[in-house]
Amino acid sequence: MLSTAREVSVFGDAIAYFNEAAELLDLDAGTRRILTKPSRQIIFSIPFQRDSGELEVYTGYRVQYSFARGPAKGGVRFHPGVTLDEVTALAFWMTWKCAVVDLPFGGGKGGVTCDPIKLSPGELERVTRRYAAELVEVVGPDKDVPAPDVGTTPQIMAWFMDTYSMHIRQHTPGVVTGKPLEVGGSRGRVEATGRGVSLTTLAQMKEMGMTPKGARVAVQGFGNVGSIATQMFADHGCTIVGISDVTGGYYNEKGLDVGGAIAYAQEHHSLDGYRGGERITNAQLLELPCDVLVPAALEKVLTADNAAHVQAKLVVEGANGPTTPEADRIFNERGIVVIPDILANAGGVTVSYFEWAQDRNGYFWKESEVNDRLADVLHTNFTEIRQVSSLRSVPLRTAAYMLAIDRVVKAMKMRGMYA
Ligand code: NAD
Image 1 (tube, helix red, strand yellow):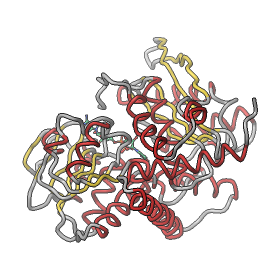
Image 2: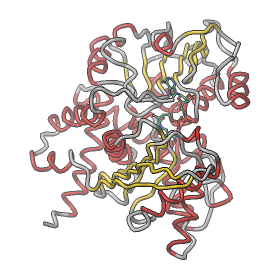
Image 3: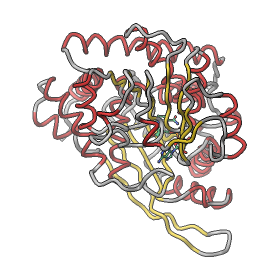
C-alpha cells in the first residue's frame, strides 16, 4: 500500500523543479503563472453499490493540466491516498513527460480515493464505469486519453473504453491506452515502462563507464515497473542485490534469483514470505551498497533524511516523484547522477502514444516494431537532454525540464492567447 502521510504538498515539490528550470530559461512571469496552474480540475462523487447491497460514495478526480501540445494524457490511480494535490502533481509531471519525449499530448491524471484490493471484481467494475460515465464529456481521443497507473489494470481500461463507447454509441478504442490486446491494446505496452527504465539506465551506465555485467542494482517496488525493469537488468548481466515491495525487502550481495522472485510474486500477489534473500526493510533497501538504485514504487522516498546514506552512483526514478528537492540537492552535491522520472519512466506513455496511433489507424504493429520505435524515441530525446545538460552545466533533471518547458512554451506561443 502506498503511504498516505504526505506532510508537504506533492504539487509544491513538483513546482520547485519547474521553477529552477524556468529561471534558467528566463521564462517571463506571465508564462510561469500559466504553467504553474492546471487548465482544469474536476472533482466528483462516485456512488456505487457494494455486493452486500450497501451504498458507498467515493471521490473521483481528473486533472487536465495542459492542452498546449495536444489532448491531455495520463493515468488513473485507484488508491486510498489519492488527493487532488497528488493528482494535480501527477498531471503536471505528465505535461513535462509527454513534452520531453516529444509526444503530441498535453498532461493529465485521474484518480479515485479507494482501496481496489478491498473491492470484488464486480464492485471494481461498477466504480470504474461510474468514473468513466462522469467523464464522458471531457475525455476522448482528441480531448483527454487516460491510461493505467497504480491500482488500475488493462481490464479496468477495457471497462472504461466500453462505458465511453456505449455512451457515445461509437466504438472508440483510442479513448484510453493500456488496454488488453483483444480490445485495441498495443503489443509491448505492459513491459514498456520497465523497458524504458532499463534502456535509459543502460545508456547512462555506458556514459559513466559502468559495465552492466556484475553491476549491483537495487529496486524498490516489484509491480509493473519494478519487476519488469529488474528482469531486464538481470537479462543484461546485472547483479540484483535488493528488491522490495510494500511487504518489505530482500537482499543478497551475490545476487537474487529474479525469475524465482517474479514467479513467487505472481503466485502470492506480493513478495511476502519469499525466502530467496536476507529480509530487510524498505528504508534499508534505499541505503544498500549498490551501483544503481531504482525507486519504482511511490513518491517522496528519497529525502533529506536518507539522501546522504544512499550508496549508489546512479539513481533511476522508475516511480513518479520519488526524490524530494532537498534530496536532489544532496545527490547533486555528492555527484550522484539521477535519471529523472519524466525521462526514466516515459517508456509507458510513449507506447501509450503508439497504442493511440494504432487504434486511430486500425492497424497494429509487431512487438519488435513497438520496441524499436520506443528505443529510438528514448535515445533521441536522452541525447538532447545530455546536450542541454553539458551545454548549461546542469543536472539531467534540470536539463530535461528545460527541454520540456521550452517545447511546451513554443507550442503555447504559436497558438497565441485566446483571451
Ligand atoms: P504497481 O501497482 O504495479 O506496483 C507498485 C509496487 O510498489 C508494488 O510492488 C507495491 O507492493 C510497491 N509498494 C507500494 N507501496 C510501497 C511502499 N510503501 N514501499 C515499498 N514498495 C511499495 O504500480 P506501477 O505501475 O509499477 O507503478 C509504480 C510507480 O511507477 C508509480 O509511481 C507510478 O506512477 C509510476 N509509473 C508507472 C507507469 C506504468 O506504466 N505502470 C508509468 C510511469 C510511471
